[in-house]
Image (tube, rainbow, N blue to C red):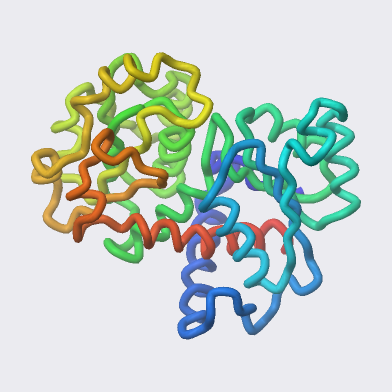
Amino acid sequence: MRNFLNIADHSSSLLRNIIDEAKDRKNKRQGQNKSSIDKDKPLDGKSMIMIFEKPSTRTRISFDLAIKQLGGSSMILNPDGIHYGKGEESIKDTARVLSEYSDILMIRTSSHKNLEEFSKYSKIPVINGLSDQSHPCQVMSDILTFEENNGNIEGKTISWIGDGNNNMSNSFIEAAVKFKFNLKIGCPKKYSPNNKILRWASKNNTKIFVTKDPREAIKDADCIMTDKWVSMNDKVNKKAKKKSLKDYQVNKKLFKLAKAECIFMHCLPVGRGEEVTDDIIDGKKSVILQQAANRVHAQKSIIYWCLS
């Protein structure tokens, strides 16, 4: 079964093919309306079920557009509207039943274990739309966005500033291994990356640079990235976490330490005035809207691979 749960699950060559396919399909759509179908209609008659355990804007809309541009259709399910969401049906039974109704399944969940359980019993491919452990589709679209602006990502330097131990940083560590770019993480010791994923990167011949000094992390960067300091369902003292991260705000002073061609990325939604200042998020170096748009194209390529 061709699932897409984590970047680490796949070879570098496959991931590169997915990115290149996304670029090709995007280029071929120049001049077409957003809801028009690709001329080759590769997934004509196919359908996707999407389950959202967590609120969503970009993931919901981009996946819906993605499957429709490929010629397919989508069905969106919310936990309150199905038995699984209310705990009245096991994940095993839900996965087996939904496999009879659709060709592919996307899940946005608070628990990566739920995702793994679905994929274990599903008879159709499963895509990770977001979990507490990883956010692979977002990172694939980020790589697509980076390469559209600054060329091939191999050998380039990405700086991650803020919380170094969340789903986005996890997926970027995995991507650094697979796409062979330099990843520098600037974060407080309390929010350092999980040692398990750092050991995995090391075993795969990739050294992730982790520092408590945000200036050191940003120096000579080709791209600076950050994320909300307090994520959805983050069961922490929000006030205390924000206080510990206040020196990791991306602002003009820090940005000056990066390369002249450095771009800024954020997966959104953004905490304006917290992890990043308005002049950066709305400035000429920011490519956040291009990132959001590219979710459609990267996910189209992922869906197409899963159903090939």
